[in-house]
Amino acid sequence: RKEVEQDPGPFNVPEGATVAFNCTYSNSASQSFFWYRQDCRKEPKLLMSVYSSGNEDGRFTAQLNRASQYISLLIRDSKLSDSATYLCVGRPHYGQNFVFGPGTRLSVLP
Amino acid sequence: NAGVTQTPKFQVLKTGQSMTLQCAQDMNHNSMYWYRQDPGMGLRLIYYSASEGTTDKGEVPNGYNVSRLNKREFSLRLESAAPSQTSVYFCASSGDGLEPQHFGDGTRLSIL
Image (tube, rainbow over all chains, first blue to last red):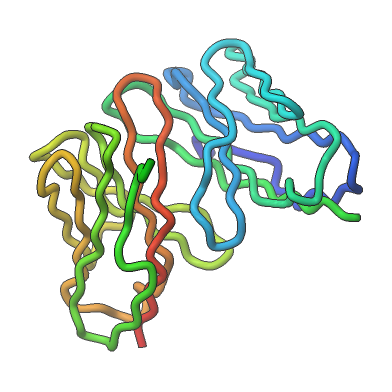
């Protein structure tokens, strides 16, 4: 089993839709989590950090459930510019490396 | 704010040539990383450096060497380039504790 798993996608949604991505992790020692977005052949860009139960930033909400070892990302009122691959990343604790999920591809359609 | 700077942005090499990819960060981060990403694939860790003076192998280190020149700079060297090393290379850095990684904008490397 991979350390971080994500919905395989792709997700094709109409503009204005609400979409949710799921991510599960196997290392219970993971301390912090991050959602990155990556556009085609560009660098991953940090979208949100998730340290406690969750985080919200505008149209984006992340939730963390440590008991179930599960993180989610909710995007409300999808925009065309939200089309990208979304990466779920875990960081166990200092000294251990970041673990990347395979990514979920989102296409927001006009 | 520069963040993580990679040079060059593009490079074409012939098989057997050598080259060094440069990376510098201005965030005073202890940890630095080199990843490669092949088309349609995820990031794979080549080497990392948890602090100045230390380097460790990642998932795919064969064919590469690294140097942590100082706290700011972490270079990746291909001694004898092979077509299988055609990829996009990303450098990243992170602070201590629970902080995220910050990425450079990548080097697109083609080996003919």
